[in-house]
Length: 453
Image 1: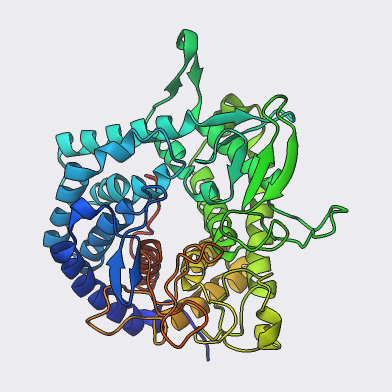
Image 2: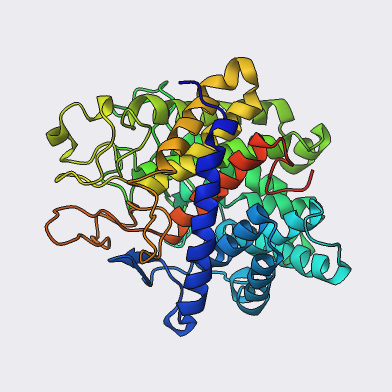
């Protein structure tokens, strides 16, 4: 059966309707003194202290529902919560997650104003723009250089640590640059935010995205490592590592999905920039940067399609998980979230599907059809049971999401040996973001981007 955005509209509308009910109820019932909702346990949201990276998704879901339904009450509620509670995240110097928290909130509000979906207001615009500019600069200050002349935004682990996750958070540096901002350093030196975001993407491609062209024993084209570690005495790359994956030599699939979507979105952004902006930012031609980002986007998306998913486009939490072999030819069958051996991570699939669709659109009909179709197929699976949380008593939207399986932070229901049936704030947000993207494509509406065109 052929698939296109229009054919998914009934499922999209169902997702959005469910999201409206669930986000409203979570907002009414969540006690913010407990912290930020992170994932569900037996269908009820709970918190988990590690870093505060999910609050933006909580309020961002309100904004996305309001956007999808043209419902001003949802947008106003998301706006109020953003203004009241997100400012500490703008100036949070201890995390690499600014693009998650602050573009999901302030960024969505600015996008809605740019699209004319909420009325123009100079003071609201100034608030959103200043918050994004400050957040981008704070993230850019987490800077470490490499011996090869590049640099990267370092993770919460410290200056030695490059995370694959950050490939989707550096977009906030791009918006801050677009707003005319820069990071001021010692002796009033101005650091170019676009330059740092580009360098980060190049360093990520060089050190923790595999391209199938090296002698490394585990060099599978498109595979990503969760973490790259550097000697901070001289900037030399030392080793790959992982925090939430199985090993440094397998693909933690949510990390892969962050890279897929991160590179695809950056390519969309680059289309709006002039050649001289690249030269000024990094001293590298725009075409050379684009070629490397296209390479990483295609490699990671091909790896997702060819190597890490079941027949329905849904992935397990890591393609090297030690008990996957017990499932037999798992790539030839639909993923089974209720199996007895390894968890499915539907959140990775929701994130990755958006990357596939965006890359397909960027490449155009001839080269991009493979990716667009794959992304829509993943979405079709996620927009239905057993992944869509249709029960009213379940507070989540997307089931079978995994946070940190090596640490066993994920709830294992009675009678099961692996985690299943639970939701996460990032999974819910990205399923809703995916639904909004497909709805816009189906109606030939304004194409949603994190930046202003």
